[in-house]
Length: 232
Image 1: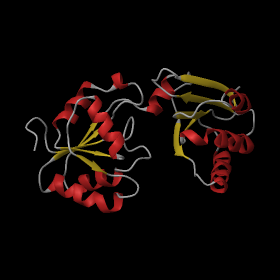
Image 2: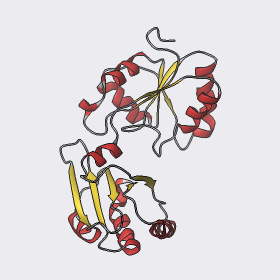
Image 3: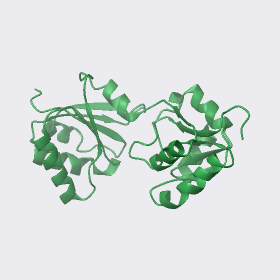
Image 4: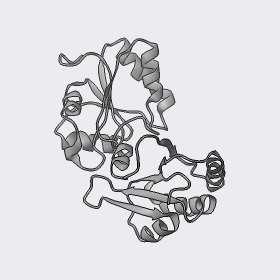
């Protein structure tokens, strides 16, 4: 067990593109925990190397979450260790593995410590210019097109609040096309592209306009904010 940290699980936000954005507290926690839990060994190890941190790495991802969660919990519960869980980028547990581990920690009396910091969702909203009194976080639509169309059909019926969607870098064009089909070409949208990186850009307009703007856009991480219906 580290002498500098209380035992338990630290949910640590890391940078989303610009390495300078990580917090001092996040670095302190990563340097002092007994081990770090990440989604992919290559990405997690690269992040630790960048900050010159040497820690054992354990994997928790969509492929092994069912079998790895309990052994990780037991290390925290019975061995009194401290661990940091990180995602590939930004704030963990938004459409990422690890929620089951956090839930079991609460149920078994293991302390959980959020270490807040960069978030692509918050960064996109900060730069969007929309009123932030109310918004809805949708997350990822289904990858299967038929299921995605059906999800958008249900979303259309529910109606009107600014909504945040996430999507993989290579599916932007398909997603915009399906949104235009189900919600109309004139529905307004904001795409926050490669946030905090040199290529960072916001695309603002109707679905039809943004599809043209992003037609030749290189693959990259993005966040979509779909404006509520009726916005001109």
